[in-house]
Amino acid sequence: MKSFITPAVLALIIAPQWSNAFCTPQLSCKSRPTAFHSKESFVVSMSEDDDNERQSRLEGNRREPTVQEISIMDDMITKLMNAKPYELPNAVSKAIRVVSSPQFFMRVAERADVATEEEEKEKLSVLASNLVATIEAVVSTTEDRMDERAQEVESVVKAAAEPDSGEFLVPLTRDRVEAMRDALNELDESSLDEVFLTTVDAWMNKSQQDGMDGMVTIMQKVLQIYAGTAVVRARAQLQANVGAAVSGKDQNQADEVAEVESIKPAARFLDKMLVMDTELWDYALKNDLENETDVKAKSVMAEVQKTIEGVVLGLENGSMAQRVQAEYLRELMVRIEALE
Image 1 (cartoon, rainbow, N blue to C red):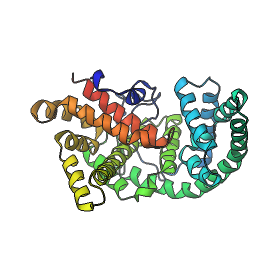
Image 2: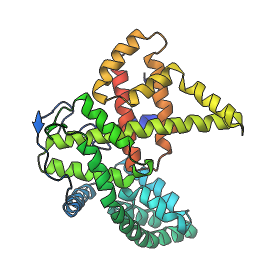
Image 3: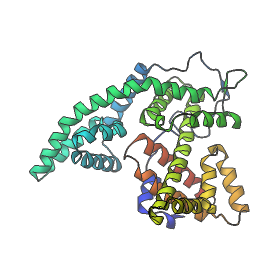
Image 4: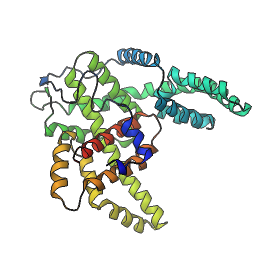
């Protein structure tokens, strides 16, 4: 399978774990507690989460950034230093974790020190000054949305509880996973933003610290369902865009091209995998790829690679959305490779 991996995709495969969608330090992929009971309220104190998150970030900032992390920061710095002032809030909000870290500001200073052109030095100096005010504004806006996103995350998590007893039984049954998927699909697409993902991540970290491994598993499932849903929607949009580009302005022809793309065996198979519980991936891959003559592992791998290049690499560099979706597709690639 290595011969089908482009350099752009290779970074996503060999990179360290970027999110907790599949594994966490406290909970391995195979470790699953049997059951635990729901609390009266799912709402986690965000002030406690913020303290824990700040502690986690501080620990991370004590080490030297990796080559990949430096590359991400440099890409973001170059983008922001050349952006118009009114473009900063939107760009910062999409990668707030990267931009607000002390390491990011240190990298801006390092680049200013080594810059040889006065224009670049000036841009970096202006960026450093503007970032402080921009981050404060973005954080203030984010806090206003946190309560709303917390309620939306709660609605998805509640769907994991057994309807009769209110208990959370882990591993989740297929019915509970589908109920969670239905709850997430009922949310407005605009709600599945960085604040939503950050809220899930904060609740997961809090559950880890409290030893609630079952809730960690459920939060992982929320991220997995989100990733599959987001990728399916982005693939559909990508196919529509390709159709429009190929056919020009004729929307009917564009729809025809998109429809042809969607009915290709490998594309159809991947779409099926993306709306399937990840616990069923291994069985589906082994059973379907062995029994379907028109779908081969090679073609599915190529379709996943195309999706990474067309969807994931187009997301804001360093954003939670990019990390979660990249890990999700990377895990699928690993499962496909295991069949060879």
